[in-house]
Image (cartoon, rainbow, N blue to C red):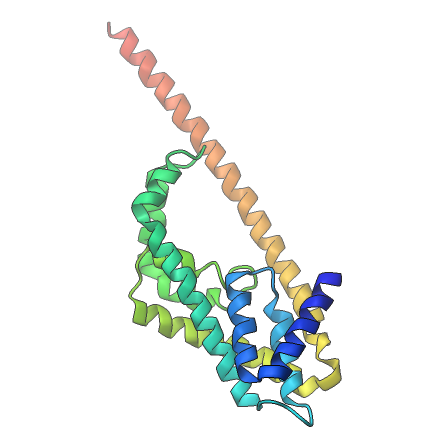
Length: 222
């Protein structure tokens, strides 16, 4: 893809010019703008660290990448906190098939399982960045959010940076393999979205039938 090549060229120049902070900036942008793929940036960072004139080392690349991941996650966390539960309930009431109770149920679920969701979410393409928003809406304790974000990010970043470092000129094989993995993940998310939509439609139809029945029963009593 042309845009992938453009990103690779830009990130390569950035890393070679300013070193570790370039890795930080690239991953920060990847977190805030998910279309920028970490599956490309991280192996490239590892490949750059392995070069004869490397501007940074392997460990430095992982540290800078994880710092960028945390900073980007915090920005999205604060976005979620700014939206807040009340505003989200107001939005939900105006969306067909959804109501404020769904927001409350989601928040209750996140309160119970949010730590696990943040940790695992950092390892799932397409979810890595977005998981920070519900954490902010739920106002998950910032220290806990940061700890699980760093843990998940270090695992993800280390795996891809080390792979790029070891593969050298074949670093792009990592992104090719991750593309296949991402395709499977997106397919699963797509099926889940369709299933959720079907469930919401069925629920709306049931509720409408109940209201009609209740209205009919009320008319019969008069």
